[in-house]
Amino acid sequence: MQERAARTRQAVLEAAADEFAERGYEGASLQRVVWRAETSIGALTFHFGTKTALAEEVSAGGHARFEVCLAELAAAPDPLRELRTLIGALARLAHEDTFVRATRRLEADRPGEVPPLTEVWLPVLRGLLDRAHGAQRLRPGVSPEDAVALLAHLAEGAMAAHGATLDSTLDSTRDSAWDSVWDSVWNVVLHGLAAEPA
Image (cartoon, rainbow, N blue to C red):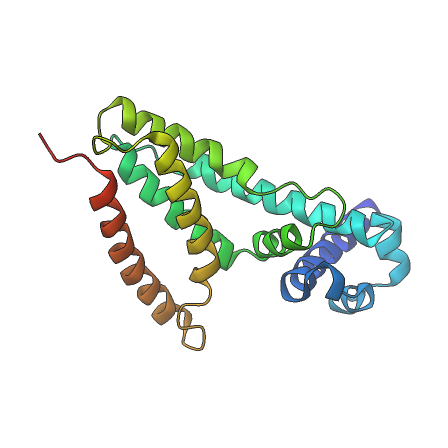
């Protein structure tokens, strides 16, 4: 019985993530969630109680997936290379993971107390920039604070843009187009941030 309840709960969460990612909080329908999950409204309310509670649980799932992604990133000797990897990974996750897409959409709608995903990744980005500054890898005159502001905006833009790049094509074509654009963008950013090699 517990196993079936756990499966139902997970099916509702996955269906809700799809619904919130597509329609946001206001546009999401609990009836469509139960239809997608192939369950009943009674099962949904048994597990989550309210639409806000369901949204908060989906958001918690998005945060957890971001944390796993960050924990799996390999450390690099060059913090600027690690920054590139970090932002690229965030963009891919925001495109590929329904819970992350739903969480980003829910952040914009602000139901209840949905904490921003920046709480997960911004401290990592700051730490890498502090490392780059300490290793004298930043161009003279570029402060870590200015670099944080620039790269935080770049990360948000990359997360928003990744899924929009050639959206009507096959995934592999879209991914290679994204990689090409991302390489070009990062080269421009690196030119502005990085100190000249000694």
